[in-house]
Length: 262
Image (cartoon, rainbow, N blue to C red; front, top):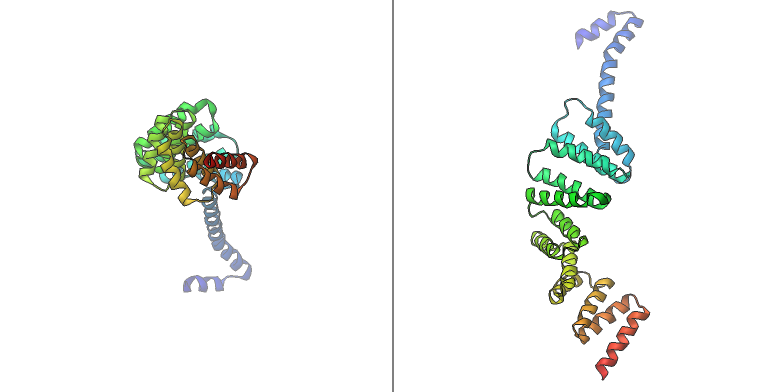
C-alpha cells in the first residue's frame, strides 16, 4: 500500500486522479454488480402479489450461465407460482416440467409434482386426470406428506370418488391429526356414504377445536336430526342460532321442541 501511495504522490494531479479512477472504477462496478445480483436473488423468492417483478428477477437468474442446479430448480419453482398468479398456468406447467426433468427421483421431485398437480387441478380443467396422476406420483415419492394427501383427498371428493377420499383423508390424519382439511373431507365422504355415525366423530373433534363454527354446528345438528337424536340436534341448532339466526333455523328448533313436548 505504501508503494502505491508513494507512486501516486509523485504523479501530476491530473494524472494522479486518472490513475485512481482507473483503480476505483472496476471496484465500483464489481460492488454494483454484487448489489444488483443480491437484489435479483431477493426478487426471485416466494411471490405474494408482485408477480411481474418476481418473474423478471427469476428470468435473470434462470438465464445465468453455470447456475447450480438447486438454485435453478428454486427459480423455476418460484417463477411457475408467479406465472399462475398472472394467469399463465400453461407456462407454469412448462417450468415445473423443466424442474422435474432435472431432479432425481425423491421427495423434492415429489414436491414439484405436487405443485404441478395442484396447478392442473385448480387452473386447467382439461388436465384433471393428469393432475391426479401427478399427485399420485408425488405421494409415492414423498409418502406421508400431509399436503399431498389433502390434495389427493380433495381431488377424489370433487370426482365423487368417496372411497378414495376417505382413504387419503385418513392417511393425512395419520400424518397430522390436526389437519382440518382432511377431517372435514373425511366427515363429508362418510356422511355421503351412509356412515354418519363415523362422520359425527370427526365433527365432534372439529367442533371441540372451533365451538362457534356455525356451519359445523348446523351440519352436526342435521346428522343428529336424521338419526332421530332430537335432544342432540336441538342443542346444536340452538348453539348455531345464538351465533347466526335464520327463519329456517328457528323453525327447526320450534319443530323439534314440539316433537319433544308431545
